[in-house]
Length: 95
Image 1 (cartoon, helix red, strand yellow):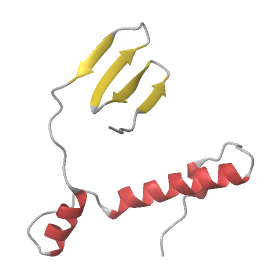
Image 2: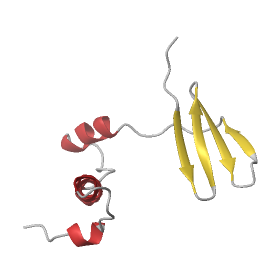
Image 3: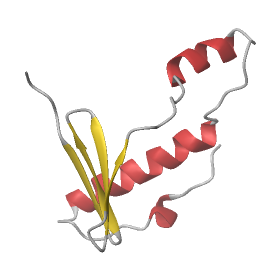
């Protein structure tokens, strides 16, 4: 059976998703299996319910705008050979 593994390395530890299970490793090597994670939300269903007037939008435009700025900074950094790009420099007023 095929499955995808994901590793996120941070300054003070990391997260390993293996076979659908999340392992949290701290900087000192302490390991914890996160097996009691509450369910999340469904952004697509929330968006539809918001259009129908049944729910408040959980992810406002400003959240999407921030993601767009971060993505744009990543693309600009890649096009400049990996040079750091400040998201703040890309932030511009919306018209």
